[in-house]
Image (cartoon, rainbow, N blue to C red; front, side, top):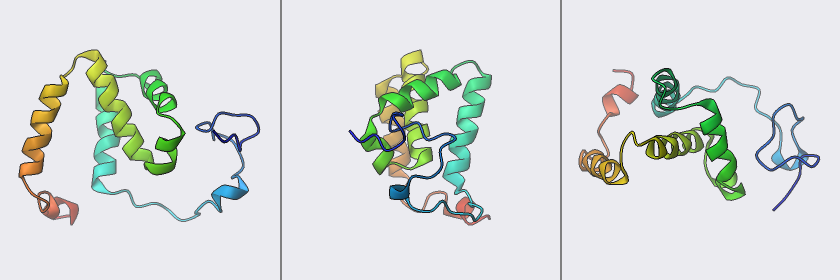
Length: 119
């Protein structure tokens, strides 16, 4: 495991100046994809409903391991953490999640194209 941030764990980058191995930080505004906005909304709504806490989000994020931080985007990690917390809380089961994922997969790859295009 690498420790490039002055002894901090690999996931703890808050307040640190960008490490030379990470490259320059982009200065432009990021236009969030619709799915990223939905993940953010799910985290907020789950918290308001009492099914999820920021502490729960952080605990799962920190337990993911360094590879997750190297291979997953910010919101991919967030949705994985939210899912793990909701499974642990009994909000839904693994079987229910699989059933819903199959239903979404059956919609095909063009589902949501109109909403993604701002229509």
